[in-house]
Amino acid sequence: MEPIVTVQDAVTAFEDFMEPTSAELDAIEREMPVILADVDLLDAHIATLDRTPTELDARRIRRARRRALAARVALLNRTAGTSLPGGAA
Image (cartoon, rainbow, N blue to C red; front, side, top):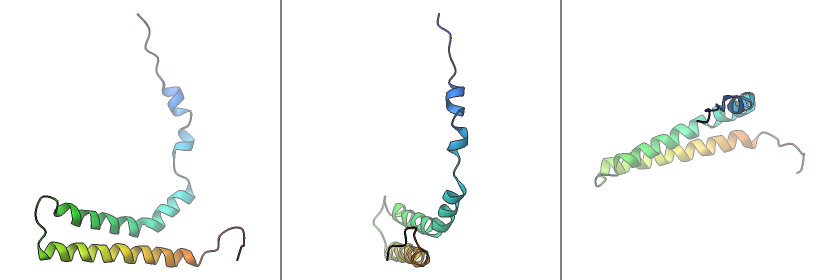
């Protein structure tokens, strides 16, 4: 019979690197309105998967699509003002 060897040392060796950095958390925070708007759009689409969409469903999807696009535009406008490293014009 062969002994069972645990791999916990191999898994936990990179534990410090598995957590997101502050920069990654900041990027997620900046993108959160886009993420939430995309979730709302997916919810609107999922609600109509098993039935024929009604006019109310179509309006809900259109509103969710507009919110998702507006969130993306707002994110792009916020990030357009920041300068990227390198200084190329």
